[in-house]
Length: 109
Image (cartoon, rainbow, N blue to C red; front, side):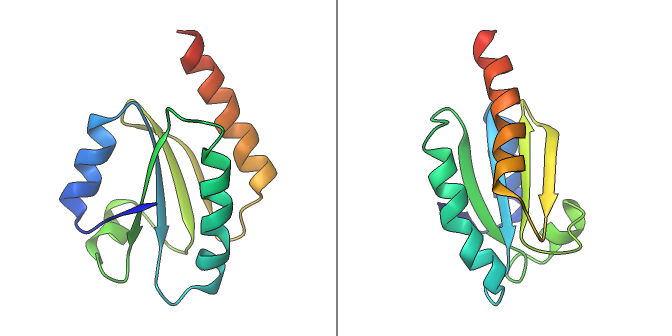
């Protein structure tokens, strides 16, 4: 998963793409490192969803902008609007179920 290096890049990425997952983490978060490969594997089933990660330890203003109180956080955007937000202890089954519902609705239109 590619990395975003500024808040401006993150906002632009969300705005310019229809289906987006923003993965928010820090470099010293063991849960973040364990979850990332699972998110990447899930995304193989959803080729139209674009995903990038941002490290709020490096891009500190992103924590405030995206209201991040704990990491990891996964935010799913559809046409720039936040539809799903999961943080800290994330159930992959629950996340994939939610993403799948939105994905199928969008694909039908």
